[in-house]
Amino acid sequence: MIDTGNGLLLLLGIKRSKQEPDEMHPFGYGLDVYFWSFVVSILIFALGGGFAIYEGIHALQDPHIIENPTWNYAVLIAALIFEGTALYLALKTFNKSRASSGNLMKNIVQSKDAATFAVIIEDTAAIIGLSIALLGVFLSQQLQNPYLDGATSVSIGVLLLVVATFLAKESKGLLLGESASPKVIASVEKIMKEHPSVKDWALPQTMHFGPESILLVIEIDLIDSMELMEAENTMVKIRAEIQRQEPTITKVFIQSSHNLHPKLS
Image 1 (tube, helix red, strand yellow):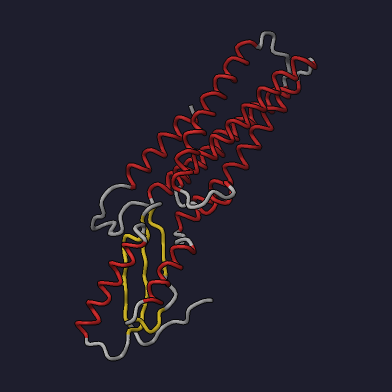
Image 2 (image 1 turned 30 degrees about the horizontal axis):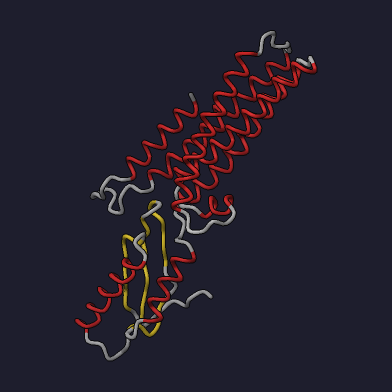
């Protein structure tokens, strides 16, 4: 039930993030998906981890051996199959969107697609938790140790708390506004460097308003001999070139100035 509810909340966030900009939200609703990812992390922490630890402590206080574990095995194995299928589909979607095929955890940390990586993290935790539960039922039967059931539940709860904390941290960073990847910023600076009318430029300032929506603000210094109209046309062309090469940059603000802030290098 918790997994289903979390999935519905993520779908809600994805749907709301696609709303068109309006007067109240001129940059759109892309951050909505990050907000709901953060809510999901809180639910995993409170309902998932908290409830599992509570049940584990209760089982340790009143230990008993499961008389007929057949249904326990059936439910756990079925859940593993469903969660494994969901994880496979989520990884398939994530692999299509990520730029490199390097370390998965590194790519998740660098990813701006909160909805997809939230599903990956949650399903991975679910598979590990179900495996622990399956092992706990098996060992409690084989060793006739009633305390293993409670210890297993507490272990799953701790796992969910760790996962929820990680997911909350990643979602919070995106919700507060993370910059574009170094690759995107390098691409923008390459355009500046190669343009014959640009003498210098300040460090590009970027912010993600969604997985595929980046705001770019950049201050440039054009050559002195330019007339006003020519300078305006040049900035229009630079803006078009940036969005052509980096389609995820959906909003570009260019300011021409002779008093540039120093670039960080």
